[in-house]
Amino acid sequence: MATLGGVNDSEASQNSVEIENLARFAVDEHNKKENAILEFARVVKAKEQVVAGTMHHLTIEAIEAGKKKIYEAEVWVKPWLNFMELKEFKHAGDVPVFTSSDLGVKRDGHGPGWQSVPVHDPSVQDAANHALKSIQQRSNSLFPYELQEVVDANAEVEDDSAKFDMLLKVKRGSAEEKLKVVVHKNSEGSYHLNRMEPHV
Image (cartoon, rainbow, N blue to C red; front, top):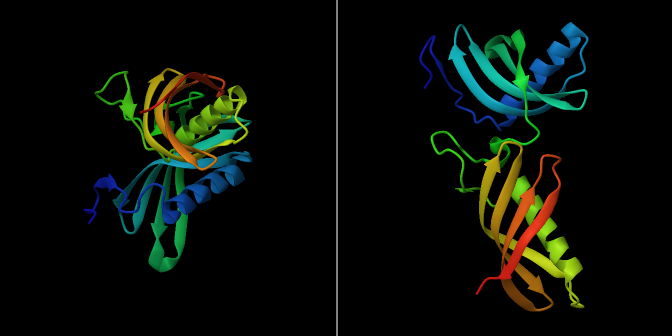
């Protein structure tokens, strides 16, 4: 339960439909007021404050002329009046081409190094699919490799590039096998398979 006047993490998660709708509203209102053409990308962080309604403090990633930027917005909501107003919208910085948050890698207090990352993360899935494609091109097997699942994934983020160390469960014909792969993602966002070996 939020305390009156204090700023707390939102009860709804930053990925919830409610928070995303508020963020889209903030971007649309900003575009109308400033005659801008920002395109909403995602909500990075969401906090809220109870003040005769709720003041939502949102950190939003939006795209301007092809570049990702971070904005901070305040949206005041009085649900019982069906009232919503954008109180503030300001640029808070540019997003590097590749960020550790893209991977769910929390580096606070950890410093650089390998960190466990969610196997369903889009970046992990992209890296796994690239690895499979590369293995396929090198293979002379009649049966194509099919990705069954990413069993385990670690990532190391360095500035604007990353390395993925993954254990993949693949299928070739009726045979299942596990492969250990290391994939590098560079600052342009392209992937390169560095290493592949069967996992016994």
